[in-house]
Length: 118
Length: 107
Image (tube, rainbow over the protein chains, first blue to last red):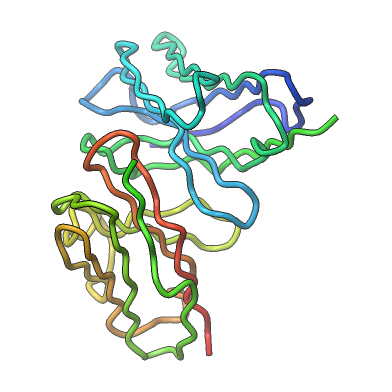
């Protein structure tokens, strides 16, 4: 199983950050797994952002105050992150991840650095 | 939100030595805790889940213990590839949170 993030590396303040994760080597619709996003500001720790089931059921980190939407496209075997009204504090490496089925993460993408700057 | 506090922030040891890392939760998480290893420029790797179960392919020198609020990751004899940053994560409730990390450095 492989996960690969894609999307812009630079986003302007107040705009929306959008990333897509493409899953290969397995179906996003199989199993009882959630799929999620985790970010890591440069030199700092990890923050879970949210998770989605293939049916569309979601859980979000309330720290993002309603700015986050995660969606899934089973026909493309992809899921996506949309984070609105970004600031410099949203600059981070964004990882897409597969849940083990019990809310741990056993597969990770390589990570995508997104910088918020004008 | 459950806060996970890891200590020490960094640990300086030699290959062959034993490493003991701590993770303390702000409230009980039962045994719902995992440990990850992250090397520079890489994504984290799951080592231990449910406090003491090794993930697939993880060497036996890695072990986890604890329950409730206090957890320990032990590396019995450090190999050169073990020098990295280690994070704990709980799954007890939403939101899922991570500890701040412990960096294991070569002495």
